[in-house]
Structures are given as C-alpha cells and as structure tokens.
Length: 144
Image (cartoon, rainbow, N blue to C red):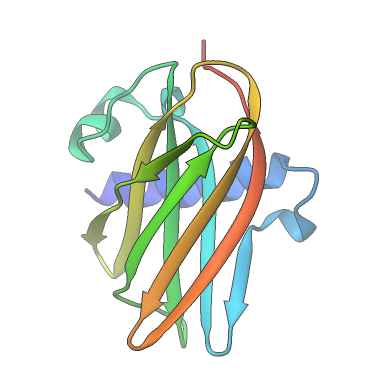
C-alpha cells in the first residue's frame, strides 16, 4: 500500500499542476486549521497494481477523486461524501472509502466518465462537529 500513497501524492501534484485555474499547482481549501487537498483524474493513470490494491476499477470510462484532510501537518480522520453533476444537473453520489497507510489517510471514490464534458463536484468534509463544503468544476475526458 506504500506505493498507493506515493502514487496518489504524485497524481495529486502532477494532475493539479496541469489545471490552468489552480494557483501554484495545488487544489486545496483551508477551513481554519484544517486544509483539504483534492484532485480528480482518469483511472487509467493508475497502474494495474495500484488499482488492484485500492480496489478501484481501471477503465477509460472511470474517474477517480482523491481527497486528503490535514490538520497541523498531520492527516485527519474525516467523513467525506459528495456528488458529481453533469451539465444537465444529473447527479451521481460519490462513495468514498478511506485508505490509511504509513502516516497518510486518503479518501477515494470513482465515478463514470462517458464523454468529454465539464462536471461539477460538491464535496462535504466533516471533521468533528464541523462540516465544510468544496465545490469545483473540471473538464473530464475518457481515457485511452
């Protein structure tokens, strides 16, 4: 699983660095002393071994969203939920699962990517008694 953490960190940095609307190559939101890092990418970016170890479907028509929550420089166990909407406002719930390994905690979910289009992601992150919401849009492309 150490390779999964390394891959997700690398994917987070490389995929978000490509996004034109992201300042300094990061996608993150800060809520007081809690920072939420997030990114999304096509599952074909995962190697077969990584996809298998994370129990993810590796397909040109599947996207992955990765969320991590940090407080005081350390990962924070959280409750992460959300939806992804297409341009017709058809919504698909995101079923996040927690991945914990070697001092890192990630929340990952998959969603379908049938065609090139802009999608709206609404992510709720609950830490203790606080719930924070992140909304962002991203153009998605089916993989090769």
